[in-house]
Amino acid sequence: MNFEKLNKLTFTTPNPNNDHVCWNKEKPISPSYKFEYDDDDFDVEDYESGLPEDFYRRVISLKTRIDEAVHEAVFEYLNDEELCCSGMFPDNTEMTGNYYIGDERYYLCSNGITVSVQTRFTCMYSNDINPIPYETDYLGLDVGLWINEEDEIEIDSVDSSSI
Image 1 (cartoon, helix red, strand yellow):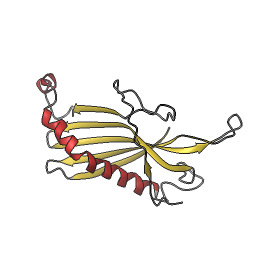
Image 2: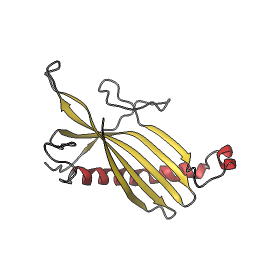
Image 3: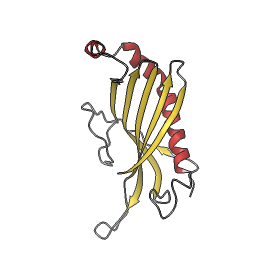
């Protein structure tokens, strides 16, 4: 089965403690966010002074394009029959086509920004104890992006995990 489109669920309940995010239909919370220096590119003095304000502004200005790149990456992954096929994990026939963002991490490097976005896809699940199907987490796809100094966004990796 190939997906013609995916439905990105957006949760707006604040997550002030940056808690781990997983499927909760009753009280879905916003993703956790982390902004850091890349350890290999900076000295201790950089950490003590904190991240520069223009780093945050740059990420905010690129957010729509980052979201589009993540959507493109997961769409291609789920429609690749060698990666997602019936009878194997992940099985795209099990998935609802719904996904949400669980975690976003931004790392400032000396020559750009490394981005890691954890997407979570849902499935309808039932068993002997719960015979009525309900939506729950099924597949995690971690999307790695690279943003160069000219703000060009490149899909670097897509890695899967069962959740």
